[in-house]
Image (cartoon, rainbow, N blue to C red; front, top):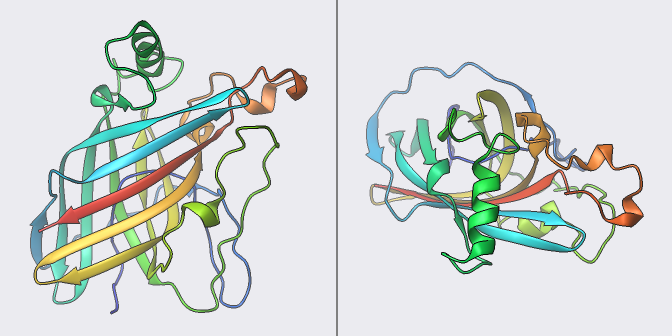
Length: 239
């Protein structure tokens, strides 16, 4: 199955470039790219579509989901020619803490604050597809070296679907900043339904989410930092 330029899912963002028969560079972002006009039949994002997130610090991890509020994919025959998705930052859920608890409220409020998403000014995140290329047998997902602790972030190869079919690229906008990201995904088009599954890491500081920036830690042995790496896992359906 061949999918042409302009495919989109949310997410993310950590660009993974590739080259046949040699490892790719990981956790790389680039400036926003032009989104061409899509042609074909428009499919609507299913309400079951989700993006899961996981953040890390040496002393522990937090994880949850961000709901999709709207989105479309445009299909021409067996090709996806465009797509755009919107996610509700204010609807962010934390799944490792009991909702309604004091700790849940403190973390949720901190994530919504200007230290992280600045949701008062930027309540949504968007992803617009800018391209798709086949994932070939010679492509390799290379892992980025991380500072080792009891909660070292998951590796890119661990997050990626078992059998990627494509490299997907798109403009991810969070906190008023837009960056283009590229990641491996497993995409299926069948009976008028498109499904896409992906998992990858982004560097949160590229979008201005710099609280506890790992790079500014004077002594990492004291564990006084938050990993810049955030893991994202997408499960998107449009029909």
